[in-house]
Image (tube, rainbow, N blue to C red; front, side, top):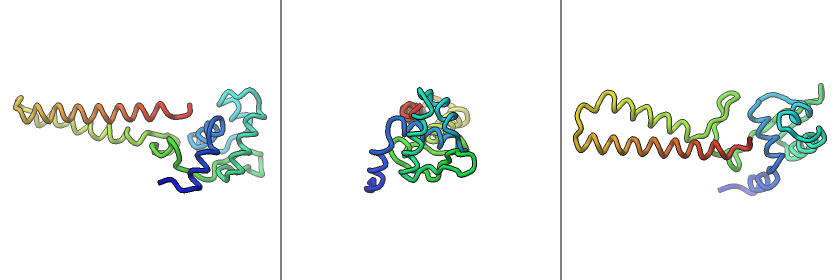
Length: 148
């Protein structure tokens, strides 16, 4: 169950502010206003500045004193982010790992254990294909929910 703070953040963190947060999370390093503007194709630097300041007010981003770049200070698991795992600078849907795991075991089973087409082997083959397909579908569905 989301707490009140998470609900407030979900309400405040939407639209372009959400895209700015996602960009900072994905990049994992400090960025200038101009870099954010160019990366997200905002019409002007003031739009990027506004959303970066909004993220500062929420306590998610901090403006560095030297250089004036903005750095992500806290990661929150709200909205679609609940379904993502960060590995280094990459974000993967959680279902991606389930899909890899199930597909690997399915292929290993087909390659090593299935010598004849018995009723049991047919059931396991169909079930394994179905489970793998469901996980790949969910991974792609969540991947499409990312802001950009």
